[in-house]
Length: 379
Length: 87
Image (cartoon, rainbow over all chains, first blue to last red; front, side):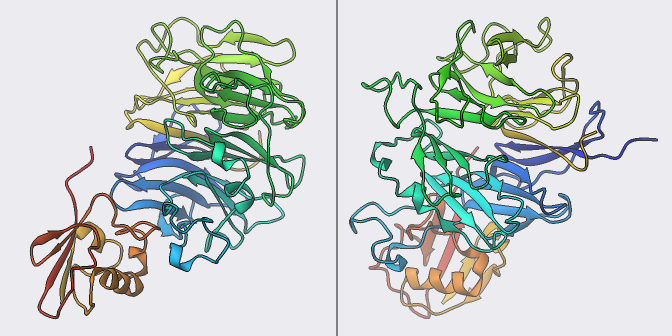
């Protein structure tokens, strides 16, 4: 008897989002109908606090950004309230831009949605462009700009990355209630210990080769960060200027660990619950931003001995590929599922922690993001 | 006035044609957004500017943004369309 389909791979693409379903063996995937067809879907995620609830962040060239929500496990989707900035005339004095002649702002792209803590089931956090973080405490019915971040005193030193001025990573630390990390291009990483009331920059030790000051307080171009699932004090970082590890919740700064790799440039990083102390990176050529050599290769970093190991044997996926910052993911099963979604619209995955790899026989539009959701217990 | 909406815009809960009254385009868009709330944010951004790929025509003539000099009367026809763009 087939095991129930309980692994959902959520793929955001240049032209809509997709849910792929498999059983725990993860050998075959069923590709579902497109969600928000025609829109750039930057991120899809599940809210494990509310079974069957999924979100898609769509950015439409014509009609702007839109949040979509499904409450039936991804079968039907409806547009949900989208975070917006109040028009200047509606802004509370002192709460908007200090200078009335300052350029008017508008939410341009929605980047990443993170469900809030388990004990705050109505809370959602959403990172957006330009340099925006929103919070909802009513299950997404309304959104409030998180001014502890968006009016941070260092903001005048933040710059846009090539993807725009985006808050692209929003991570809760499961071991420290209230602790929240955000990644911003190109401002760096920031940590809050009060669920967003206040933030401080945590970028010590991360190079910014594109600035006169190579080690500024802020301004680094972080591409993605991932927490070690068993020890979330350990955090892995793919930055524009290398791969880094922090082992004390970023308090100890960052250690450059990219030595020995063919390139320190890349976009994605992922960690897997079944493989603690390890992180997965996909180094890219810093000029072309495509894979090095003649094929796709994913590297495993082991923090205990700072060793790197290429995971894909031979060259089963020849050609030039690339992944965006949300293009690497892992699931929480054991053995771990590892996934890469490429800008050439292919999904490459391993269902056994990186020993064997396959490419899904389905051509997607260019993939922005990939995330794996597992319904139910781990094994 | 007679207002015609692009069929894609009509998917956000508005009828393809409506008779409305407004003194100018800003008021017209506000009326549409109030009456059909899913249109909020679709025709113009949070700063109130017409989105890049939304085109407004008054009596068949294109209007640049929400030109406040364009006044509207009961016999006017307004078309709100999406432009040819994308890929």
